[in-house]
Length: 407
Image 1: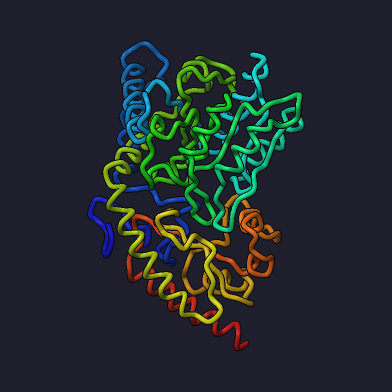
Image 2: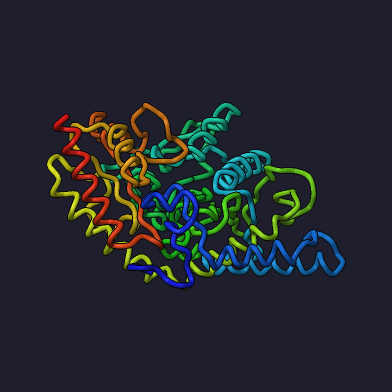
């Protein structure tokens, strides 16, 4: 998986535009694994039936969808019947929060929502929309590592929120997309349940990269995205624990047991299933390798004058391949442009916020001063990253930072 890669895996620098860059933005999207592409090509060529049709080609397509459902369920430690396919993480987040909120309101149950200040925009914007529909929302702060405190959650749920409306839904991400912090979801979910609330987690950055067992963690609903674990874009999953009521977001046919209408994209779903199976098998080895590479990277970067780190210093508390850092006094835009010209693809944070001149809401919530936030970059390593890539990037960063200072 390291070094020169595996013959079973496509190296991203051998394909199209990626031939000109060293790709270090795996949190934005992952290059599809060659094994996933092979499965999808076979599906496109041979499996043309509508998975809702009762004749033979339809039954064949259905069997492939159900195989993928089992593969994803295995990755999450879930029952296959609790897995619903969507178009991606954003749809899954919307479906979970809106569906749970309206279902609880219709049943006369507490339907206030509690989330954190560092969630992905797919959660934060959804919560803002729900506020406009009359659902109260609480935003919990985080500490300097971007971590939600179980004690803070307990305190809010114990006193209640607005006498007229108790919290019924808690939504805290499993791992942060900008700094990589892994949240104490098991503790948070237990507290939510103690107070009668359902627990949703956005696991888009975590699924396929850290072990997930929805039963052990106490998760009632979970969102993931296929293109974050070497599967195809436009695919996602919403896990909903049996017994949790959720209103459909998309109405129409009876696909996905009535929860998500629309003809199933069988090739993409099969690709997602394949990606989930590969991730489950190779997760431990990949994580070990990525931690090794991240240590090499930070050891190199930390010797650059003015370097600072935003990701947790304890690597066990963050995603193996995520490093958020900066160089004092050097604006991120200047470095991003120069590093892009030098052949390195990195980012300043969430791809969904690319182009924004505002400081990252995640870094701001962590208490990082605006000048540092405006200097911060995110490097995310992945399955195809090599040690040579990491060392080449560190050398380029050192050179470009010096050039900016000397300009």
